[in-house]
Structure formats: structure tokens, C-alpha cells
Length: 355
Figure 1: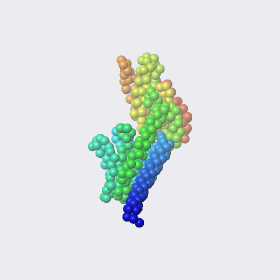
Figure 2 (figure 1 turned 120 degrees about the vertical axis):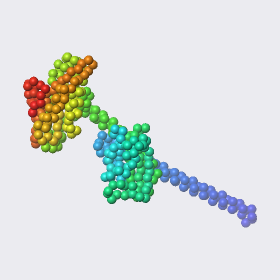
Figure 3 (figure 1 turned 135 degrees about the horizontal axis):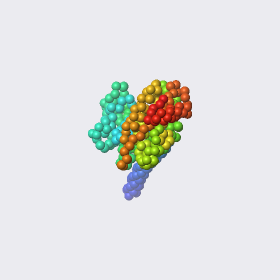
């Protein structure tokens, strides 16, 4: 083979080898891109599935537990804690940790030391857990939950292995958080709409329909006994006729607030109809306990001046009490007994409490 042909052959071989290397590099690069796209597609599919799953639990009290389960299952973390904003503070709503004192970002935010929250990745060779339990935490991500610029809450995911969590987990968690933020907001709106449908628009008390939808179950679980109390504003028609319906509305609101604010959180108060209010009281051991509480409420109503424009007046109420010590009476019977006592009080001159 002549020298010229030999040079041409070597050049062709070199060109071919370079082309082959370039082709292999291009194929590897394309395969890498395909793998990345597949991962993104898998992530998007996963996020869509998670979003659908969470939205199925809209309105449920289990929504926080659902979010925690998702964090543990998808990220493979050991611990997950969910905080939601209440009264401008981050309040723990769910966690599989007994002690969360090491969540410093939460305490700094709630105490006003920091105003804005940011995602924080921590990997520590030393244990960051401060509780007494035999628990190790060496890797964590703190991530606030924002919808637009509104802080809805925060999630803390943690692992017992050092350097387990990394930037890739942050990317996945960020994508999940965006969907979770929408779901949390939807859940808030759902519960607000649901609560509004259960409330009387004028007084803010529960309405009659809601009262009867829950009362049977409450009576079954009422501890030592329960009480039904019927409260009626005396001469309310005369009040409306004398001072007008707007003043009458003010009276209804004020009386409702006095009753509601002087009952226990486990009691239930609802507008029964017109100027009549019904109260369910939980775990009643003695009818006199109810009597003295209602006597206090009656006297507060009588002694409260209700002002509207140039009008300043007060009203009285009549109250009838029925008690079921062994939860043996059904709701209709209890209401009937309370009504009978209410009208006994009306007959005795009103402004009274009868049991």
C-alpha cells in the first residue's frame, strides 16, 4: 500500500472513530435526557395521583394524616410533621413524633424572631432530636407551604440516616407542596362553606337542621347524662312592634352571644326557630348544675342594655330544663319536657328558669 493510500486510510479510520465517539456521546446524552423526562413524567403522574387522592378527602379531618402518610411513603422518610396556620401561628396538626421541640424554625416564627420562612435542608452527624425517646434524626427538610404569597403551613420531613435527604428530595417535595397547598386551601374553603350551611345567618348559632342531624349521636355519648334547655325571649313580638325589626335582630344576636359565651365548648346551642333557642348540655350529673348555669345566663340577659340608635332597652327570657340522667329519653321526649317547663315559667310571670 502506497504512503498516500495509507494516510487516507488512517484519516478515514480516525474520522470514523471520532464520528463513532460523537454518535455514542449523542446517544448517551439522549438516553440521559429520556431518563430525566421519564422521571419528570413519573413525578407528574405521581403528583396528579396524589392530588386526586387528597382531594377525595376534602372536608375530612383525616386530611393531615393523609399528607403525612404521603410524605413518608413517597420520600421514604422516617418522620413527617404537618403544621397549619391558625391565628397567624403555625400549629402542629399531625406528626408521628412525640416531641417536636427541635423544630426551631417553627418556634422562631411563632415567637416573631423571623417573619419569612424558607426551605431548609439539614444533614447533621450528631443527633438533632431533643426528646427523651430513643430516636435518631440526622437528616431533615423544613419547607413552608405557600399559596401565592399566603403562608398556609409548613412540613418537616426527617430521617435517621445522615445525608439521606438531598436537593433531589427538595425538588420532589416542592412539586408535592404546590399541589398540597391547593388541596389545603380547597379544604379550608370546603369547611367554611359547610360550616356556613350549618349556621343561622343572623345569630351565628347552629341552625335547627344541623342540631337534629347530630343530636342523637351526641346523646348516645353524653357521659353521665345530658340536658335539653329551651330558651325563649319574653314578649319578643312586642319588642319588634315597639322598636322595629332591626332592633329585634340586635336583641336576637346579643341574647345568642350571651348564651353561647357562657356555655362549655362541648355543649351545643342552636336557633330552634323565631326567638327560641335550644341548648344541649353534655355530661350532666345533677339538674341543679344546669339550673344555676341557666339562672346566671338569664340574669345576665336581663341586666344587659341593648342599644341601637336612640333606643336603649333590655329583655328577659324564660327557660325550661329537661334532664336525662341515664340517657334513656329520646330527643323528642326531652324537648317536650323542656317545652312544658318553659311554658310553666311563662305562666308564672316570665323571666324564670324552671326544671
